[in-house]
Length: 101
Image 1: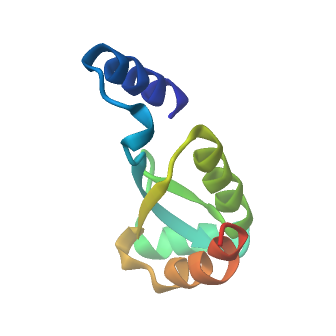
Image 2 (image 1 turned 180 degrees about the horizontal axis):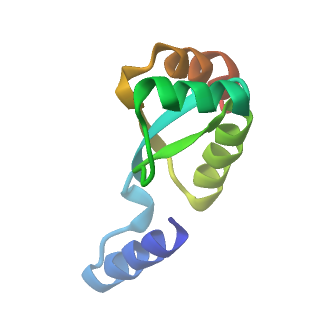
């Protein structure tokens, strides 16, 4: 992400556009569970095998990831749940988002 934003900053300087006026966004899909055992069972149940586009992990690990996105300069992180997994939505709401509110 930092490299992409560095390229964007350079482009803004080239064309004379203020970098600070651009909202930096990223889109990512998640599959979350409370622990690794539950995550493995969920992947099996939903048929999600490697390679995967997105992030699969625990609520704690995605909290770290979202923090890295924020630290890189992302202002809006658009997320979706793989296979529209309800628990992923619930964990994002209950265990991840409060760290960034």
